[in-house]
View 1: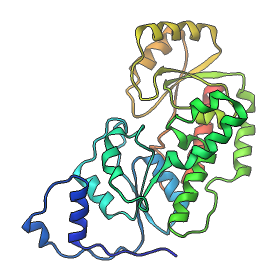
View 2 (view 1 turned 45 degrees about the vertical axis):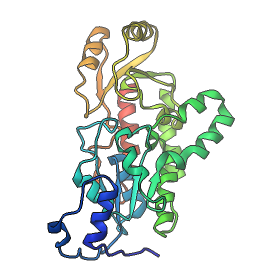
View 3 (view 1 turned 90 degrees about the vertical axis):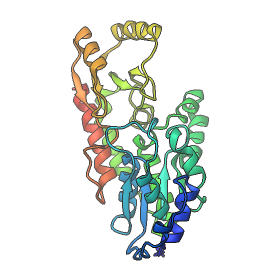
Length: 297
């Protein structure tokens, strides 16, 4: 059964203090008591997790995310407004310390009952894949862009539902996953170049070849030797397009596209254009498949 929690001002301020927001003041202690929440409040670090959470809870909880659309989770420091949301949330969902490095100290102070670390939810699945497929899957288990695999999306959703006492249900069905995978079958001999290394989970889930990337998984520029080797690989590979992402300027992608006469195709792995609704995750994955197919056509 879903719990409804009333937070008073003192408790909220003490929580903010524990999160490093500052000291208590006489003025702040005189604020009125907050009204009871009409529904549980879930805060996620990034929008992809909000997409998963909203799909998991439907209208049974309120969902918000912290990271602005134009910022990188690797470099984002939590402002006071974010600390207040975290303090008032019943549940906080993030990827983990290797992905959101500047949020790690804050998240470490939260009680385990309040925090879901997404990487912890998929480790058993990644381990099973490693046993079945060998060391390559072990390396992929460290890829933090795990929301791009629908099985992992379902696993994270199930943990959210369990924490709130909701019925466990998949947010994208296996029949739909199989249909999307079948629609990609004609693209299994093609590959792509992306702005940064983020799609191992997606291509494994949909049985596509691994792509190439201009930057590493954190979006950092690779060294000169790596850039030289990349250009040699592009010349020898069946590259269909270069993906550009809305949160990056894409100047380096445009330069390589011009150099090798490759088309640029928009790809939105953060779901920045995806509305938060009951079917958000299913729509998000379907949109990604359509974007990949646009590259391979």
